[in-house]
Each structure stands twice: as C-alpha cells, then as structure tokens.
Image 1: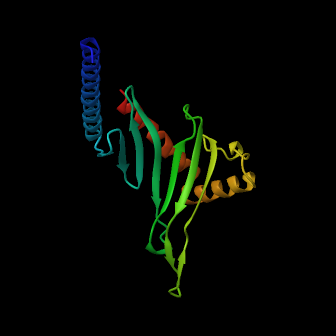
Image 2: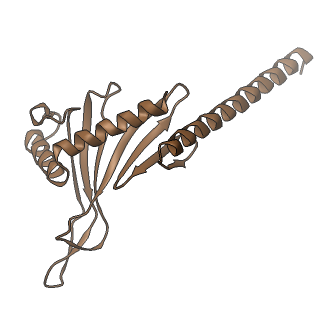
Image 3: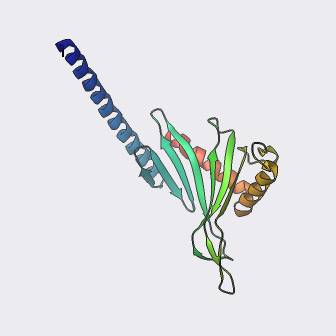
Amino acid sequence: MPQKVLKKIICIVFFAFIIAVAIYFFINYKKEMITEKANKAGESVEFSGYKNFSIKEGAVTYFYTLGIAKVKFIKYEIVVEEPDKKVKKGELTVSVQNKDKDGKQIEGSYDDTRTLIADDGTEKNMHSGMFFICNNNFDRSSLVTTGWIDAEQKAIEAYESVTGYVPVEGLKQYYNRALTICNQLNE
C-alpha cells in the first residue's frame, strides 16, 4: 500500500476519533448542565442511554431527548389511580406526545395493563389502549378523524376515555409544564 494512502487513512481515523471524543465530552457537559438545572429547581433527572432522560414531578413523568443544539420534549406520562378499583397488578397510564415537529398536533393515549379484582373476587384483565390526535389545545373539535376504519368513532372514544381519566384542563396544564421545563433546560 503506498504511503500516501496510508497517511490519508491514518488522518481520517485520527480526525474521526477526535470528533467522537469531542461529541462525548459535549454530551456529558450537557448532561451535567441539565442535572444541575433540574437540581436547582428541586427536581431529579434520570438518564436512560446517552441522550434520553426523564423528570418526575408527582404522578407525572416528563420525557425529553438531548440533541446537539437543544433539549426536545418527547412525551409525558401519568399513572392514573382510580380509588374505587381494586388492582391486582398492572397500571393505567395516560400519555401525551407531540405528533409533529412544531408541536401543533399532539397524540393523547391511554394504556391499561391492569388486572382488576371485582367485589366477588373474580379477576378481570383490562389490557386495552386507544389514542387520538388533535391540536395542542386538546379541542375535541380538532380530532383527526381520517386514516383508518371507523376513525371518527375511535377518535371520539379515545378522547372521551383519556379525558375521563385526566380532564382536559389537566392535560393542558401538564403539557404546558412539559414545554416550560424544556424551555428552562434550553436557557
């Protein structure tokens, strides 16, 4: 192999290594900044992997991803507890996430993995879930009702189910809180 080719290969490998090390230190620096900001606000951060993390506030967990330029909101989840239900195992989770890059459309959903115990002692597996898409004001009139069979009816059922577990004002409040946290982390 000619020496010029070998020198080029060594240079490429060296520069790739330098770039990888720089990205590694940059991401660790961003992680430290995020952790510090969250701690100052009295919140704890839990990282999963090198760029995904969550912040928990009470029953709500907010999920974000760490990009090179900024932190981006992914979704939030609420574990819903119904005091009148006896649960053997599992949980009922309501989640909201951005459906588009601008955050103008959101997807709301619930996932029920509970096994409930009836008054007579019998067990009922819930194992259900539905989703809907609407604007970020959670307006029922903005439900997306195309794209699948019985879309309108399914969207309405999902919307009513989710808003039955967490009222619209609560969904808005949590969504706005998620965006506020994101903006604070990007300052």
